[in-house]
Image 1 (tube, rainbow, N blue to C red):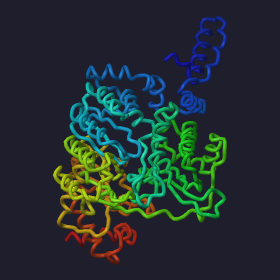
Image 2 (image 1 turned 90 degrees about the vertical axis):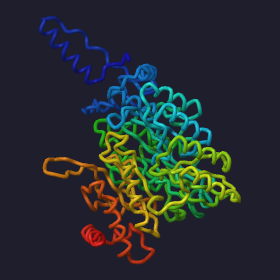
Image 3 (image 1 turned 30 degrees about the vertical axis):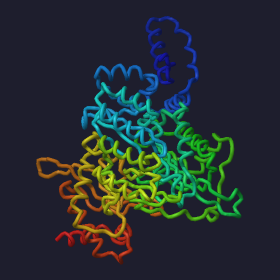
Length: 586
């Protein structure tokens, strides 16, 4: 790239030349001129790298790869090599994620493509177009993700460029959806239609989405970054699990600022590392949210860890610095103070409904409802997608809303046509209602499509639901989250029951089978808690029966019919819970 030498490279060259000339007994040449300070669209990132090296740090390989050949400058090579059927080298597998393409071998000898869908909302014709692309260029199905997004899988290299370009043809993008970038921005699933919402998050999520797409400095961060907007609607957005969470709140009269709706700023969520975003005491004018988020990201770019991938998240910078110092740096970027307010001057936020992402619910618009459709473990075939798109076009307002709960919502359905909508959903082979278990079932891709996963999470999730159907009837909401590895894409720590994949030894020879470590007592929103370990090394084939026994113990020993599963588990230590579970299993 014609790059100037890094400081450590210059020092090495100076030493080498000095030694070489001394050996020849000739005068050394003049010291080379100092390298010019990085310039151009990536200057901020490269300056951060140079400061790290100057301070004695050793950059991780990913930092070197993106500087040696920036992914956005390498699309022609990506296209040329992919169309030839070539599989990417490790450094290119990292680079191509900047374009949304993940080569997922050995789990699948193909690419996965992850999209960007701001606030999780797209049109019926875009949804149908994704189905067509998945069928023509991929495996014929898609996954709804826990960031209210879509993934297309089983894309052979030859088809990868055509798929990325086909998405752009219908107004969708995959740019920056992987690697060291800002991931899909989430917002309230029922934004603009929810009777109780405080604010419509769609314009702010879209503004942040377009800011990212059009600002080169928003790429090449120390590691991935998540941002979410919650408008105070019925369906939880899980903004507290994000690096930045904007929570709509009502500021009361008597406050030293304008009364009305603001965003409360929370920072540092990363539940895979057992931490939720914490309230900063700062409120943000909704129109200023993008500017504030931009400043926060710039501070992270400047000071985030580029030497250790396990510590390269915002949480660890906050842990090192403390919130006060970090926010001072944000204010320097903004050139103005942030607005702080006493929590007593903020009204209590509306309660969420853990079942509102399933079934039919009245909208704020008179005579209309939204319909939450159950997508088993988040997997849809192309045929199912086209049928859903047709219902949205024929009976709804044409929008399709994805949720962080891995299902689909159709909005704008007239009350007079609800019966017709129910019949058409059932005709697809899908459901608009579900048991407590199926309504709260969340699973990552698992070992069928991810090289990191230790277990087939989607398959085992459905096996658990099938086993519990007809055996357990719950009158309280329940979330069961299955994640395949420590990355915790399915956020197992926030589930009432959370399972993380593990290889379980079955004999002295070291043979292993798929299995899980089981956690209990997690929560989110107002009940945010990190689940604790209950049972280790449970074989996958035994997990359904273990969970059945655990739920039977809950039903037999809960304080009363109103006690939630999470509250029940908090009242008992692991030894007592396991004793009750063993009793229930006999």
